[in-house]
Length: 531
Ligand SMILES: [Zn+2]
Image (cartoon, rainbow, N blue to C red; front, side, top):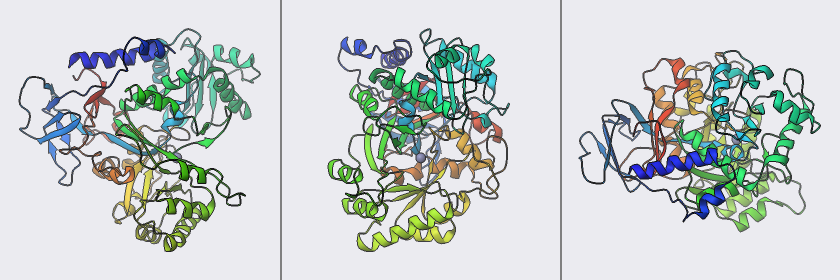
C-alpha cells in the first residue's frame, strides 16, 4: 500500500524536478499504471450527497469503487489500509462540468495557478515554492487563473515583488493585466516585447508576450508536464472530474489566452492517459465555430460529427459532445441532433438565451433533442419562462462562473433555477477568463459576493448544501454518468477530505478550503499526511 503511494509521490516529484525527462523515466520500465488501494476511511464526517443526504463516519473502498458506506462497515483485515479521518469532513470528488483545463494544461513555461492565494505576499510565497523545483532561468508563468480582484491589495504583483521569486515570471490575469519581473523583462525586450518600468505589459504587447512564450517554450514534453500539473493542482482543491469545453482554434501559437490548436491540444492528456498517469478524470467536448454562411456548409463540424465518437473512451478520459459553441447556426444544430450528439452553447444575456432556445425549439420539431441532454451554460439572464421552455426540450443549465464578476443582480438566478425542476449543474468556466477554484466559486454562490466583497447576486444565493449538490450529484446528468458525484455503493471511489468543515466554517473561510486527501477511483491523487 505504502509503496503504491510512494510511487505516486515519486512520479509527482519527477514531474516537478525532471523537466522534459519523461522519456527516460518511461524507458526504465513498463508504463506506471495507476494502482488502486483498498482503503477503509473511519471517524469521518462523510457527506454522501446521496438521495437520503446521509452523513456517515465510514467508507470502504475496494477495487476503485465504494464497497460499503455507513457507520460500522470497516473492519481490520489483511490488505486493507485503514485511515482515521479524526473527525474531518469528506465530500464526493467535485465535478466541474465545464471549464478550460485543457487550455491550462497547454500553457507555456512552468504554469502555476494562483487561485488559492488571497494576498500578494502569499502569491509570491507560492511562486517561490514553485521556483525551488524549477531549473534556473526557466519561466514561471500564471496564464489565466489569477485576478487582481482576488488579492486583498486589489492589484497584481509588481516587478519588484516578482523579482523575489528568483526566476523569470510572467503573469497574465483572467480579467486583463500582464506583469513580469526584471529577468522576464530582459527576456521579453530581447524578443521585441515592450515592458513598462514597473513590469506591466500593456495592450497588444501582452498578447505578443504570450505568443512569444508559446513559440519558444512549448514542446510535446512541456505540454505533457503542464497537463499533469494542471490536473494534479486541482486535485488539491478536491476536483476529481473536469469536463473541458474547448478553446478557440488557432493553427499557430496564438496571442489569446483562450486560443489553442483544438486538433492537437488534447495530445498531452492522451499521452498521460496512455502512461496510466492521469491524476483526475477528463471529459472532452469539441468547440466549433463554423460560420452559418460557410460554403460548403459546416466545414469543421461536419467532419467532426462524421469521424469521431461522442462519449467514447474510458473512466479516465472520454469524449463528450459539441460545445461550448456549436457553430454553423441552425444547420449546425440540425447536424448535431441528427448525429445524436449533445450540444452546448453559452449565453451572456437575455437576447442570446432567447435566440438559443427558439432555435432549439425549431430543430426539436424536426429531429427530437429531448433525450440528448443539450446544455446552455452561464445563463446570467434566464427568466422562468425560458427555463420552462428549456425544460420542455430536455435541456439543462450550468451555473457558477461568478467570483470575478461585477455589478448588482448580475445572475445567474440560482435560487429560481434550483427550485424550478430543470436540470441544473455547476461549472466554473475557469482557466482562461475566470478561476477554476471551486471554493472561490462556491463562496460567491453562498454569500452573493465577488472576490472584491461586492454583493452581485441580489437575493439569489444558495445554501452550502445546495451549492455542493450542484457540483457533485447534480452534475451526474451533465457528464452523463451515474456512477460519479456521490458516495454510494458501486460508484467510483472519488472523494476529497477537506482541511476544514465546509458546512460550519465562517463564510470568509470557504475561499481557503482545500483538500488534504483526494482519492480518484481508489488511487491517491493528493495526500497531505492524512494517509
Ligand atoms: Zn467556457
